Image 1 (tube, rainbow, N blue to C red):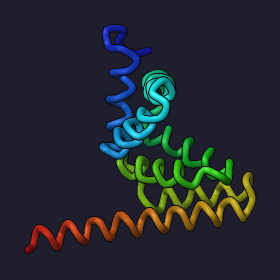
Image 2 (cartoon, rainbow, N blue to C red):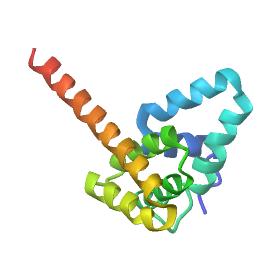
Image 3 (cartoon, rainbow, N blue to C red):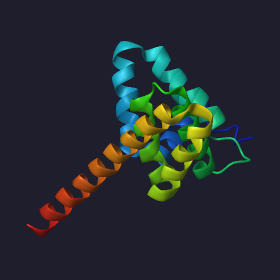
Length: 139
């Protein structure tokens, strides 16, 4: 499975960081304030155990996660987080849109429409942040 010398927590933090960069650490820190055990479980189980398994690369895992979140239809915050994570591990915007579009068959059009609007908002936020960063570098 994975290197036994590395703890589930360390492996989870490393995987979380690869997918979600500093945003993942921020979410864990916020959860630690109110539910430290839950925050630890969030790092260790999904990221330390499941996302770290061999057999699928992180891109494929993010495709599956985005698809699952679309079908739930009520996890906009998590969907936004995993859309960003998908981009971080190499998914393109077009691929993310196609995953969401495919889910219209299984989750229904309302879930897909809502997810596409979350994706648009996420893409717009990323573009605005990149534009702001570029302006700051030029100044």
